[in-house]
Length: 184
View 1 (cartoon, rainbow, N blue to C red):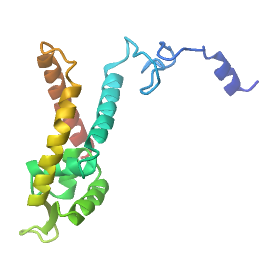
View 2 (view 1 turned 180 degrees about the vertical axis):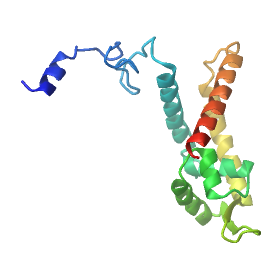
View 3 (view 1 turned 45 degrees about the vertical axis):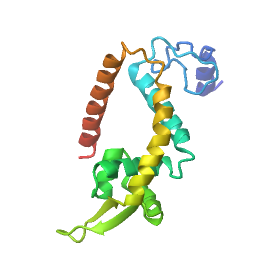
View 4 (view 1 turned 135 degrees about the vertical axis):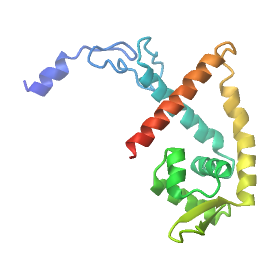
């Protein structure tokens, strides 16, 4: 018997969702396993990662039918809030790569939602600006998507909301700082 076979045979058979000493990060639980129970001792980072991914997947489904991709809508939201950013600045705010932003912006430009303009002070710099059509499209899409997203959180007890809100704001702040530090 090879070392690999011995290791494989030595692993105890574990039902989905059961705790495994060899997998302390999530106890064998994987998002998407039909009928798998979330382990009560699952670490917060694992729970948060799954929550973020599942919300992102729902966001993508909710954005379908708006006439704009979820990535395009995300970029429009950033530019509506901070018009005139460089692609790298949009990427940093949207936790995306500059290459992804460039590709999505190419589509937004073709659709008439975004314009690229040279910076007045440094002609080498290209800035992104939302057109009026882009502002309308962003508003229409968000009007369609926001109620679906809000209704998904109806399970939250209003008494729990301040604690959840604080946790999320602290998480956003902490991870935003960590990402900025990593990019230096």
